[in-house]
Image 1: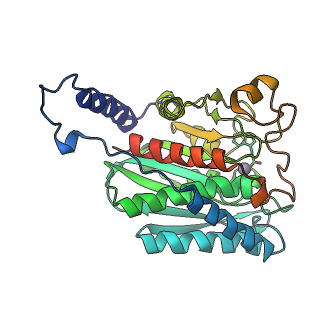
Image 2: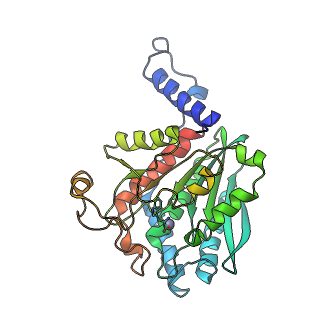
Image 3: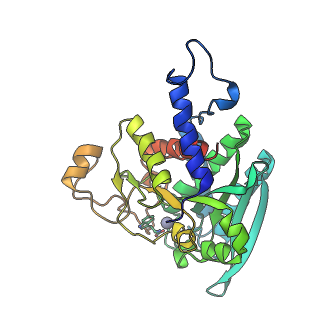
Length: 317
Ligand code: TRP
Ligand code: ZN
């Protein structure tokens, strides 16, 4: 598996900094130079993430009950995100494609600065199924990625890598938007992407804490975050290749991500370690009309949002 230089460097840097702060390599009493100190990720306010979910719910309600590809609720969702990203100083681009005879859109937001030879991408699919408002699948990932991007702007973060955030269209039709994005990249631009982080369903109402078992550095960064807050994790096995990270993985880009479970049933052992209800699906409203703002576990949404920010900061400096 291809491992990115800057992801490796970032991880090594974080270890070196931790050692320095612990006094392992610094001379007694010497403060580390500011340039060597890793910037800590901010706490992502879950209230902000939930406010985005409320807006996405309202958008669905006002547009026939869904935010699906080729429907007005999708377009309104994209506009809601784009306006905030533009106001925060991102350089945004709307990429158009066609799927099932309707026009689809990806939203791509670049944070100005950073090394353009080392790009860290963070993404989520913004479209939903036609049967409901699609708040857990995937308002949750879309909102957490949006709030992470806005936190980058609020803190004036200057990463050494270039950060690019993306919201994909037509994932529910077979990863169409992300596949299109990857196919449109030149091979040089593709090789500049050190890693792609994917967030699809991160607030399931009966949650599990699943980490994608792909790039080892990305995986370890997520696992270390959860270990640090005392939350056990498991490897994601409900659907390898069932979300947009597959589009990047197929092109040789290192990938990772988080997931709280879809239609699979939580076991007794899982309920013991995570709470919730054994013998019930992680998300009983998966792809149905009840995937509303009531279909979200706030604790899972909060932990995963913070894990995203932690990983973005760790891997980009
Ligand atoms: N991508 C699927 C959807 O949107 C949901 C899903 C199922 C999933 N299994 C997964 C997402 C594993 C990420 C990882 O319908
Ligand atoms: Zn999804």
